[in-house]
Image 1 (cartoon, rainbow, N blue to C red):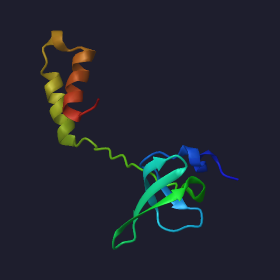
Image 2 (image 1 turned 180 degrees about the vertical axis):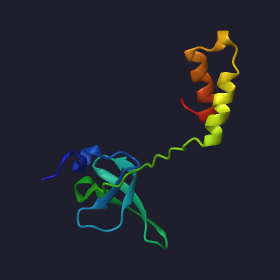
Image 3 (image 1 turned 30 degrees about the vertical axis):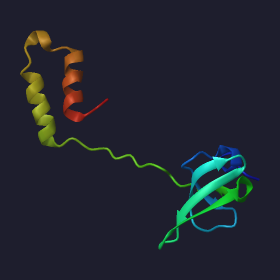
Length: 107
């Protein structure tokens, strides 16, 4: 029995799917009722075909990779120098956060 991630109604445009019988991973390009328009590459050319939802399942592929940049010692030293050079009346939590966000790109 399929779990929720395999249910046909869970597919969106951009989902990565594979035929129930196996084969190449495909990307859902368009959804037309119960038909999925899929594209894939066989390594030589791009192919496309329309499949009934019931014939494909989620490929379980992860769609994104998160990359975190670590601050170097120099980055930290520069931030510490800037923070320690603030006038006393500007040494607030909010000001520190603003400087650190600017330096390290936090949201």
